[in-house]
Image (tube, rainbow, N blue to C red; front, top):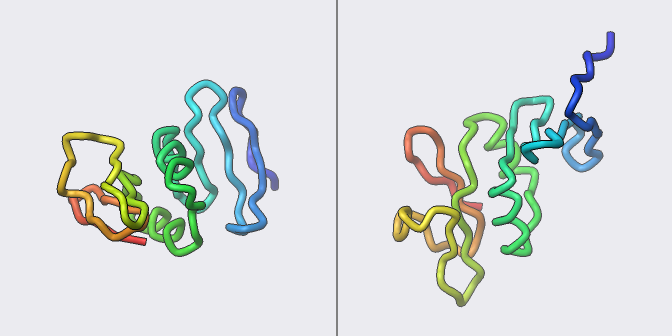
Length: 107
């Protein structure tokens, strides 16, 4: 039986992630069928980094939740969504995700 479509959401299927997702039209939040959620701010960071969300990072967000808090392009200074995080964001030249316990994962 198909899931009920809620008003104010647009529904899609991702061939890349092999799951359905919905975009909330008013807020811009994206919810995936298996549990990963992305805020508009996370998409802004991904766009600035020039990096697309890879499958491993997406699976991590599906399992632990978490939020993309920053990125660093190789050879540049770290850019973060929250300036209060400062040096807490790992400088790895990749996307940084923090979970609810404050643990960082780098991709």
